[in-house]
Length: 477
Ligand SMILES: NCC(=O)N[C@@H](Cc1c[nH]cn1)C(=O)O
Ligand SMILES: [Zn+2]
Ligand SMILES: [Zn+2]
Image (cartoon, rainbow, N blue to C red):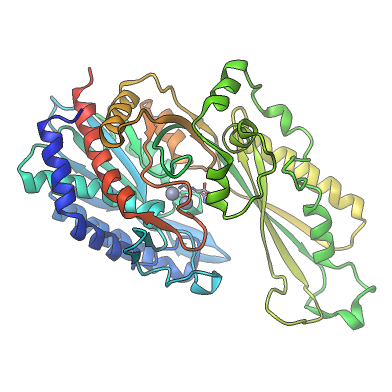
């Protein structure tokens, strides 16, 4: 049940609907893709824009440089992290808010119906389409909208806020762990708990709160041989072909039903308990939720609990792409000289990127040796992150549950998420504080996919949720 302050706040968010949608449109218009060197300047532009927004709302904030990285052979400046602060009343709790202002790549030619970096609102359905609308610009702006509404109402913020906003989450959060370690006893002092809004509901109607994430181990597998691309009529049947070697190896990593074939991986997974299995059996979820989100009927099982566990508590291995392969329309008869296969594993307790690296490296080298190929193989472990699991028996979760009940009128499901936000574990371990994931968007938002969207209702009610959560934090003992 909302109290008087919460009611005033919620009404103000409704009154601000048009202006806060405009704020999201401005953010989406900045193509802050972190994984492509050509777009790096826009990640900086996004950091500047957000910094100005935060300062405009009365926060103190600064850009923290992270140094350089090498991306695709080029040395590049890493985007800065924004560290901001609003309020330092010792009588109030301090919540650290994390989010990321970088996005996944998006081109209209990938199959988008609209320009990816333009927020296009369908008035009939309420869908706001644009890259980053749900992952993670909408949720970040949700926090700013909360602060703005309080200021407009002359309503005191119920807690102190600290912001840690990064521009490299979609590319391995390079440099962030080191910054958190360095600032542990400086900027991060006094933090009581952490809240991250960067994931999604399980379906499209019922809210959830999330206490677990899978980790990740990402690989690039390069096979090279000929000094240049070759004519397949002249050299087909004559040389060991890099693409043939790559296919042979990649096809041995995982079965079409998702079983990981790398020896030793399954042994790292914590055993399933009866109590845990029951939680998946009763979770408010149907296969239609998944089918709606994928736009297909392609689950690897018809068993709801199995599908849920496949996403939340078991590892997976996905093949993402092949760089250097002929991929244009037409029928070019080429033998590519060098190809790079990209794949990743999502990790669950008790897997670590280090243990997984050992097993993956051994398996790939063994399989390559079996081919008897004269080509050269190079396996690179790109970014990695451990899985994370939090104790939901904490006031931070209690506040989120109450706030969800106020906004949506239902008790949220307690979920684990299949994606990865490696910094979550860094916050939990380095600051030794409880971390909570409080999602804004729905399962069918299409994060990382074409036509990413955030529903107007999720943006507005999700903003209210973040604000009421802060009020409930202040009310907990
Ligand atoms: N919303 C969180 C998210 O999308 N995280 C990414 C992180 C990542 C790792 N490598 C590339 N991106 C995810 O894929 O889970
Ligand atoms: Zn995200
Ligand atoms: Zn993402």
